[in-house]
Image (cartoon, rainbow, N blue to C red; front, top):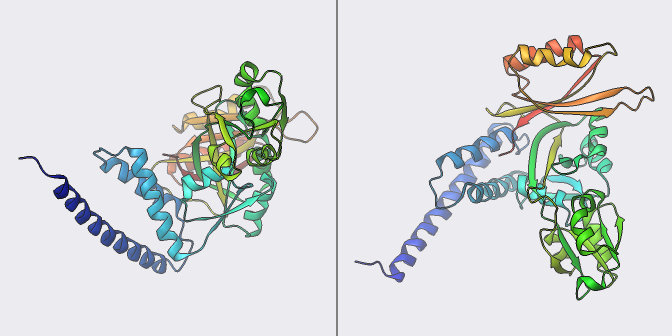
Length: 354
């Protein structure tokens, strides 16, 4: 016998009642946990990563793993907000992809602190003006974000998390159509990520780089012959029409963000460690530098070189390795590296982004 719609709705209502009761019970336990750890920071990246992994492992559908991850991120965000009001610094103004990365990682109940530059995000964390910051470090299409890498070299802040954000670029304007657009504003990275699309669809338009995508949207909102490349969120904030969606040249376009704070995350069971090192200027130095990783069974997932800014054609290397620095094999590899490298700085260990 088929179940009637009224019966289905009655069952949903009963489940909703139970869900409210369970969420309230969870929030109370989260408050107890905060007091049990001496009112320390409510944000524990390793614990939150473990919760999200467990949720995905338990999932049997029909909700996707990504959908459950978003739901539980917001649950933890709301519980965290009961314990402390936390401000996360990011490259502003509102409407940037950096803000989207903050919301994806910390949830919408976490406060944001939009700042004018990546330098200011680092400074806010270093001085304690913000508990945490989120900065872009690399894009799958355009590579490293050089300013973030340069600042990581000298900062006292630590990397304690990462966020992988699929970047969906949109063209927005107050113009009626693309034919009326004479200028396109956007961040340098976004202009580069959409250069083929722009060459095909707006070959005559001047491309003007500005400090952020949200600033581009603001400028476009003041000129009917201008457009911006930014997120759909920025379009809504500045009252712009979306003339085209998903205009990035690479449909898999993703930006990786680092979460920076003043302390490392504890081991979560699936971690990554980031470090910076330089080699002595001798033949075979780079090979010798990587040997300890292989010897101790530690996998390297990223290697990026940057000028050391000493004016002597010297370079530093940014490396990501699998594992937490407190795991025995990683600790042994790092100890061996420190004996071989001219300079070594561990930027932090943190959970791998889900």
